[in-house]
Image (tube, rainbow, N blue to C red):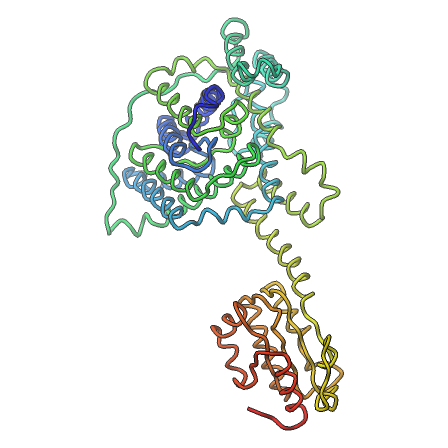
Length: 542
């Protein structure tokens, strides 16, 4: 059940707190994109509301994000003379996200290994902490993310706004030490926000504040879509849709890890698509699931889509005239709240186990962490998934290759009483049993281990027994074909037995069985042994 009032107070606190955090971020992203601060707010309202209502991650808060802003900035630069075309790209990107959801592509995000999830979660926490250190001491946020922040620190030369620092320490003290019994009535981030704003207004007046909030209703931007322009906007729209989908679903995983719930990936893509269509129609910045705002929402008590929708409605109210209420919020208080959020995002549980974790998995986690901090989230996850895939493939290969049993003679099999012909053929017939599944991971080694050509003993025939084989992928099937070709070139007769199910279908569909006479593909092991003995004895059949 997505919508209910059982957590109404938590959802209200979460939505308001997320809106206050989202306000300066949305305006900053709007400026960075080249569309202006109001476009950032329109995007936060449109994507934030519709993604919450129609999406599949209950506490998710959506809006403009860093990766989406970068892509949109490039789109705006290219279409600066034709902004309706730029918003048509946002509109089309939303439709593509809906298509992704309808095609059920979102479920594949569930295959992300925990080492990768832990790496980018910890990386996000580190990024938040590093970036917010400057506003904490009264300086504006630096361009260039954490790297730009670290470079700025090198040139500060001890310049600190004392009022901002005192406010930051005051706010940090509230969010860290706020009593649990009071948190049930008033969450610590909201308490810090109210108390810090009052302190800034009457005592520590030199601390930087949010300042003027843009206001006004958006104008409808009808998308300029035509067959002539479609080829030019399809590629950037696809990039926008793909990036927004990945960004949102990664945030969904973070939300799941905190709330211990499970999101609906495909529904989330549909909700994000609807939100971006709405953003394109009102001239707003495209958005995605925002990790920082989602975590702020959850930590403040938000658990249902009501919090995400309320966050958007609060921003709408500010745009429609309530902006002065937020103009006096000090940046240092927001930084204090976000420092605690960043600390809580870091996966301390996994970091404590890192020394005892498998080295290859720990390596994946650390690489993902470093790339998240110093490159970007998408690159980090892509590299992490590739590394994790290689490690998993190696593990799979080790397990799959245990299913190869290479017997020098068929009468070595259990509970088998050899016939006179079989005893005469001993040493001339080899039996290779293939058990379980075989994939690309073990395909090359399968050829080496199951090959009888290079053995010290000279065989006249070989039996490949698939009785206990459950599945072969394309790579493994082509490895079997290579085994048959190697045996044929060496003059060794091949017999196959026990094929059924998925393994049989794969070999037939790829025409691997065309390499062997139909009379040598038998149902039972006993039939195969009798035939192989005949073939090895010089009486070929078929």
